[in-house]
Length: 516
Image (cartoon, rainbow, N blue to C red; front, side, top):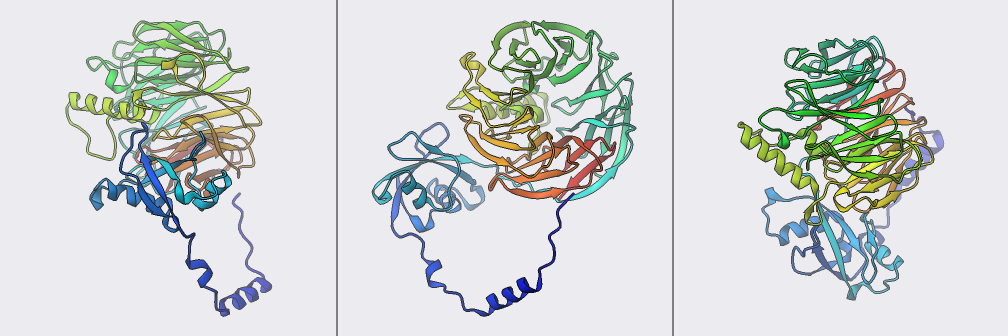
């Protein structure tokens, strides 16, 4: 349901023609604000990066400051890093997350009449070196499933493989390069509610309403391991793999959450249940496995629980929500999901792979100098809480603003933003540092089910009941591309970790792939 603009009327054409014939007054535009200010650059840990330097206000755009900082750090042209800047207003505790178009105006609005004598502190956050292009067209529509598609996820190793779970009791693996079905994974006796690739991309786990978890080999499409992992007494709602750098001698584990109020931890190779984490008093809606060996679970009993995966014991109960907890996100999700795969060459040996996966996790988890995995929980009480479980059970921030229940929440891969999608037709963007509200993305005309960031954190795609996907720019918080094409509600969306493709599925049973 994309809106097509009507062609220009005769009056608009005539006015445009008149406008092109008048000589513009160029003198007023050319000069920016006169004067300069002193800039002090800090890194994310608050350490000073370079000497204080005087910057002319006329040239103080974010791009120019980024070039200036790279030059001050004596980097070669090839090694330039793009930066985003947060502005600390002098003599106050106010931090402006969004870089303004007019810096002078911003400083004056905070009561700094004469900014020429002040030193302005700017915290620099490095952006991704690579750039993901916004997806603009549907490359393939692949029919195959007999019922609605309920879950979709790209393989961490390649954007050439997409897994989907459906109401027709099967999961499928699709070859996204050719746009063809690759394997049908049949074995479940009821709807497949969740799919999860192992972080090394060698296995796929599916959870179903038939109370079991099944493992598959994506190379052959056959069942892997010992058959179905059974033990839950009600359906499986969510699955999380153990992060790659914690795997012991090549034997991964996975956690499954269920409506029977428990989380089960399985040894994948033997199919044994290692722990049953019980304590929730209602259905467990979401489970995440953190890089420090903690399992986080969100439940309809309004709590988030933090477990020790090794011992199977409860570490914290985070109870602040007034209604069901629908979804959880970790600040390290992206690094854990893709383990040792990134835009550089993949290491060959087991040891190097673990080392790289651990390095990527630690980089993602680093917050103010120490390793602190942040957690955000989204609830039916219209609010979200930002937690730092390593610091205790008090929330860091309460994120208020949604008018209805919140479906889905996710951190950007660089850990600087949080996006939340809800039944109020809005997606909201928050600062992941302190939970401050940044902006609302308006455009969908029905509830939004899921959202996913691009790998460089510069774009966000949302999937909605209104049958469209929309791509939003995180630089302007405006709609970048509207992607109509589905014939019915879109339940699941994922952006491939290499940024090449977006895959989506929903009620119209066909997988759609979107490319640039």
